Each structure stands twice: as C-alpha cells, then as structure tokens.
Image (cartoon, rainbow, N blue to C red; front, side, top):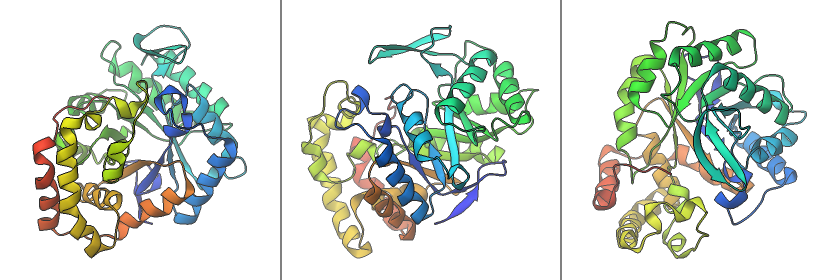
Length: 335
C-alpha cells in the first residue's frame, strides 16, 4: 500500500480509501442490504491490504452506513482514519430542501449549529469520541462560508475532528473556504466526481488543489460498475437505484463502452489486470496528490482494487485509453 499526508493535516492515509455508500443500502442500492458482520469482514480485508482510510456519510442509508461502521470498528477504531460528512441531515431543523427518499426529507444546512449537531450525531452513531475528517457534503451558498469555516475550525480545536474538506463543490468554493478569515488549518481534502468518462470537473480542480496542497479525492472512477466490463451493461436496476440514473444505462452509450472494452482488452492482457484495475490506474496517473475512493462491499473487492497500485501505464497508453472513450465522454454528471 502507498500512503500520503491528507493535504496540510497530520493524517497519513492510504492512497486507496474505502467508500461505504453502498453499505447504507436502501432504495439507492437496491440489490442488497449489508450486516454488521459483513462490514466487519470488509474492514478485516482493508486492514490486511493496508487500507486505513474509510469514508462514509450520515445520509448513506440515513444513518445505516455509520451505524454498521460503528459496530465494525469496535476495538480497532485507532486502526483507521475515519471520514464522514456534514451539512445533509433529516432532522427537520432548517436548511435548504435537498431530496426526499425512503420516507425521509433531507435538507442541506451549513450553518454552525447544524454542523455541530451533524458531528455529534455521527460520533454517537459510530461510537467514537473523535472523527479524523469531516467533509461538507454539498457546498451551500445560502449561509456564510466564514461561519461554516469557523465552526469546523472550532471542532478541530475541541479535538472532535482533525481535518475537514469539501465535496460536490467548485474550484471557486475552495478559494473561498481557503480565504475565510477564520481559516487556520484549512481544507485538507476535496472529494469530487472524476472518471475517464467524465474527467473535466476534476481537471478544472487540479490546479486549485495544487495551489493549496489540498488532496483531491476522486469518487465514481468505476462509474458505479459500468466500467468493470461489458457484462455489467446487461444488468437492470430499479428506478430508484443510483445506477439507473446515470447515462451509461442508456443504450446509446453501450456501443461506445463495448468498443472501449474491446480496445482495452490487449492492454489488460499485457498488464495481467481487469478492466476495473486498468481504469483505476488511469485515474491515479492523472494527478500526483490523488486519493482513490472506491465503493466496496465484499472482502474480495478489496484485494482486487489494491492491485491497481502495481500497474504502470505509459503516457501513450494513458492517452490511448481516453481517446477510445472521447466520443461518449460527458461534461456534467450530477448523480
């Protein structure tokens, strides 16, 4: 495993991070529900492979993901860097409407009192007295950034969190957060969508992350499974499932994806790797301060993912991989 500092913080994190959106289940991930025992086995596999960085959020299953992790972390909390999020909650205490799902109405609220309550709720659900990193889940323009930054910096001073970051944001948001008078430690990590099928937002963000020594954490590299191989294109999902709401479920993209898999097959054979490992290696090569956040629900997925760190792709190979999918790349992909 490879490790690096998370931005300007003192946290030393594995290059690959475990994403636990899928653990939350519910209508967004309609194919299975996870148990605490399965979550524990998943963490066993992470420990074995050297992955120490775990990402979750309160709204992943409206508390389910955090609660499962809390049970799985019992007795080994200090083995992992634990990252969760704030701003999205279903307490009905204000903020902007974000969505309704599974009987809950979720609002986006970046006011100081909401952030403090979010952190306390996450500490309780995960049975811990501190969080290593807290990310503003959706940057919100309705409330003063200075107050949001002040609340996060105060939580650091109190020892309740050790670092903070942004997600679902723009480069201008990072500039604004880093310019807030209340900033002391600043934004350590930016978590944004990035894949070979939609690389544009990430590439716009990279120079700003470099300016502030902020880690760019990418999610969606495998496009929720659609970049794992042609067989995935045959799967059907419920209308509420996240995988039914992204472009690649549409037939018009399938020929382009199949051509890509066909073009990448010789490279997979040469590197002795899977399609998933190939596109993960491609993503890591795009930016030097990259954290690869991968959603995994089975222990065997962990060892498979770590294999991408051993792959070496030349500039020509990287360019050729992307050239194949340029006809079907999309500029904006909002899940």
